Image 1 (cartoon, rainbow, N blue to C red):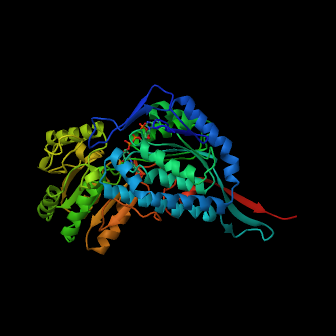
Image 2: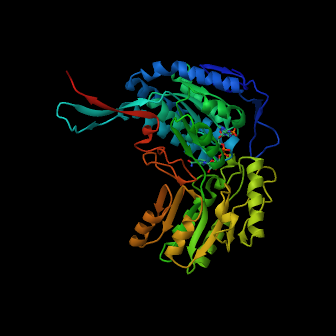
Image 3: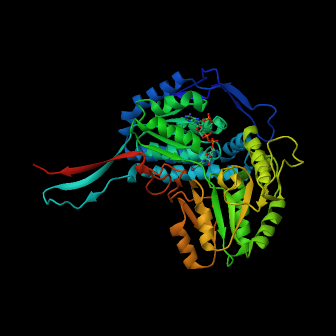
Length: 482
Ligand code: NAP
């Protein structure tokens, strides 16, 4: 296998044969590409679907024990290769190496958790209205599923989709982000090494605009699971809609952290920093709006600014607090939003540009704005960078109203010691993930994950005890024996 063999179709590693060039750069040192190669063509995408379709019956017929064993072994290999995988991830995505290692360990945890789905993703026996009839449900694999993933968690997100799909007996075509194909390739290599049969997992590395429609609208594709921007997710949902197959789209966020006057302000400041600036703000669940009661707004803002200014910025391999944005495009967008916020009248408290050092790389300072009004673009649109807007409110009701006054609804948190207020918040807030006295970021593998409103198709959740529901048909059986 040569370095440019990024397509894995029916068990064979090969070059892409389109005219698209996929160029992978270290965002901390982008001058020289790490690797450049041809992306997959539409024909190769179709071949990957063909391979997955041909392998489908045999994989569905494997025993749960075999699938559990294989996926558990994947987890072991991920753990055994943790440092090498983390280095690849950090080199192409930019996040601090300790976060990279954490994400790789999480991928192993995910495979271990979902391996057991092979044995446990089951139907149920339901009391029958007819004593002569046994009524129960069974879960069966969809068949071929297309998995499309973004760059910001480039091993965790493919892992939770792959592990769930494979455990439940589906075959797969994985299309990772063109920004982060190296880690996707290494993950698929591990799957091949542990004996996943040819055709069961196929990797198509190609531009979404070239291969996307072929991977989602092909009539042999039985389900599509997508994570990425709302714009792309809505495009896919529209193109797939007429086929009536299961589709799951998990998309952007504009996540609020509400802070009431009775809150532990030190803890609230720590959470805002971690939520807004961890991973350079490149998490779908990143905190981008700090909605603060006016009585504590100055004190909390001062604590947040002090912490933001203490954060170290640098190449991910040096393990700073904040690494670079993933690409030149993302960095430009961050800087543009900072300009827009200033033009709209927000007050820059700290950050606001590229740091003096490092000189190279897509770095932007952790940035905090105050005097942010709910209608401003900085308060409405997903920035996907280290930019936090502080919005002052007069009371709890206004805080909830402002928090809900966006198109998105992914995650939200509240800091308060008032139990009635926190309970009321969980009821009123329009978000799929709600934290009381915690950051908007982070989730447990056994908890369901997904958003509301423009953040999600709200079909079935990912992760959690019931993530298998998306990847399976449920049949209701009425059995009356002769
Ligand atoms: P993106 O631009 O939407 O890309 C996501 C994936 O879709 C990539 O693999 C991309 O391929 C592919 N794609 C692009 N156009 C396509 C098309 N026409 N048909 C099919 N696939 C297509 O998103 P991103 O910039 O990678 O990721 C950042 C976004 O993801 C943010 O909005 C973030 O909030 C969201 N996100 C959401 C969650 C969640 O669980 N809710 C988690 C993580 C990230 P190319 O790379 O080749 O363009």
